[in-house]
Picture 1: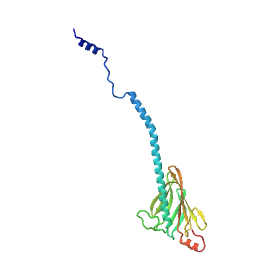
Picture 2: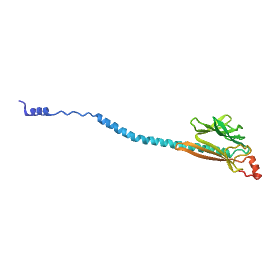
Picture 3: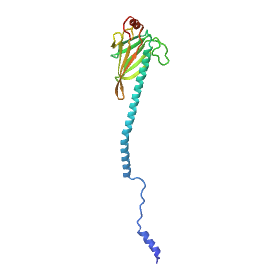
Picture 4: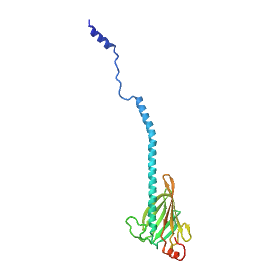
Length: 221
C-alpha cells in the first residue's frame, strides 16, 4: 500500500490541466492592423512632403528667373551705356518662320558685347528673337557666326526706342545718324507662379550727329 505522500503527488499530477505556450509572433489580425495604421500615416505624411517639395521647387525657379533677368539687365545696361559715339543702331522687323520679329543690330562697336574668349570684332552684333517649339520665345546674341543665349521660355519680347528729338516712343529704329536716347526691353516671362512682366530700360550715349543737332538748337537726349 503506497504511503500518503506518494498518493497525494500522484493525484495532484493527474488533476492538473496542462498550459499551452503562447506563440510570440504577431497574429494575422495584429499584422493587418499594423499595416492599416502605417497606410494611414503614409497617406497623411505624403501630401505634406509633396507640398514641401513643390514649394521648394517653385522658390528655386523664381530665384533662377530673377537671377537671369538681373544678369540680362546688368549685361545690356553696362554695354549700352558705353557704346562708342559713332555706333550705328538699327531695329527692323524680320520674317522668322512666318512671324515678324524685331531684330536689333549694332555696328561699329568692336569691343561691345564681348563674351568668352572673343576679343575686339568689327562684325555686326544682333539681338535676335527666336520662336521655340513650345510657343514661347528666346533672346539670342549673334556675332560673327557665334551665338550666345540670353533668355529662354519668354511669352513676349518687345523693343521700343525713345526719340529725344520728337520726344516720342518708336516701335523700330531706322535712323543711322542718331541714337535712341532710351532702349526699352519689354518682357513677359512664364514664371512658376504665372506670367511675370518685366520692363528694362537702357540709356545710351548720344551719337556724334546728335551732338551737332543739339548744339544747333535741337533737343538732344
